[in-house]
Image (cartoon, rainbow, N blue to C red; front, side, top):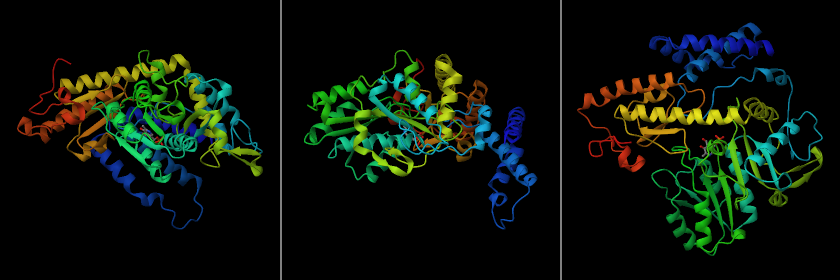
Amino acid sequence: MESLGQNNMAVKVAFIHDANKLSREEERHENVDENNSDRFAITQCIGETDTHLDALITRYAHTLTNYSLRNLGYPINQDFNYEALAPLLQFHLNNAGDPFLGSSFSLNSMKFEVSILDWFAKLWEIEKNEYWGYVTTGGTEGNLHGILVGREQLPDGILYTSEDSHYSIFKIARMYRMQCVKVASLISGEIDCVQLETSLLVNKDKSAIINLNIGTTLKGAIDDIDLVIKTLDKCGFTNDQFYIHCDGALCGIMLPFMKQALRISFKKPIGSVTISGHKFLGCPSPCGVLITRLKYINALSRDVDIIASRDATITGSRCGHSPVFLWYALKKKGLTGLENEVHNCIFKARYLLNQLRRAGIGAMLNEYSNIVVFERPLDDNFTRRWNLASNKNIAHVVVMKHVTIEMLDTFVCEFVQKRSVWYKDGQVQPLCIAKDVGSRNCACSIHKLSRNY
Ligand SMILES: Cc1ncc(COP(=O)(O)O)c(C=O)c1O
């Protein structure tokens, strides 16, 4: 197990050097090869030799390394090294049950789990004896749990969330058969509190379960918790008539390290917060953290004899390696490391914004965000090559720790070259994206990208 890990790391490092030199032709072959899924087909199932399996895995690692060198559009941090944890891959680790009560299945990592939950509780300002939480499979499960807690508290509650919310929120509303009001967003992507107020007043007879985005998926916009609480108050909702869940998938762990940014704090009347562990923290497989108030948990817990624990989580068996990854990431980086990483990502995002704008490409960046939004490239091959995420007329780059200035320079340079082909050296005008990014950030023939940015 260990030697396979070291071997893969050596492959990764060597390949990072070589891949920069990969010609387009070589790259095309890599992709064709990778798309040939027959290589992985389990047809005869005869029991393969280790040599053959090692060769397949090594080739797969090459392809992944190649992809990861141009992975700009998705919020995963690829700059990690968890080799030190390789010895743990020899164990099945399963945290089924309540991390605070333990379980009769002793191959668990609940001690690690509780230590990281304590850390997040402190970060988001809730006392140890007042919170409950667990390590989830990711942001979606955190949302599933947080909104379930809200619904158990306020069974007749209407779910309010902005139109920029992650698709999981709308899916959850369907799964739980909750009435869901989609509230309009501002151009920044932030929930429009004027619209929220109107919707709350129309439904004043029902309690409100509000999902807030601490970093929207597309634009990294931060919903203003304080303004939402004021709006609820203004509309006559008392604290026992609303529940606020904060979906902080990417930015929930970044904001506390930005001095002027909005504070995520359980000193405010919020009910739950969740983040994804594979995003900013760079865990190698999907995971997340959910923190809520202990007083809410009894409503959805049941004692379970077979595991000698309490069932209060969404899934039964839970990955025991994830808490160890999270613990290792936090221990290794420390507060200073995390703060530096946040500032470094924001710095590089501002750099990218400036480079795009200098090249005459419409782009925007929210103040406390590492997500740069710009006009959608016209060629899907280019979008695929850089693993960009796009939506209608816009696309984005999420500037994570593994993204270097060199990667950004190469990206902008290729974008500019391609653009001159798509727009026939200026004879064709780029699409107007003013309604997505604001007129001062749009480079169409009418708005002409404000230069005094
Ligand atoms: C705002 C937001 N919430 C939830 C999620 C879902 O997180 P996960 O993919 O960890 O389930 C995402 C994913 O990008 C997101 O951006």
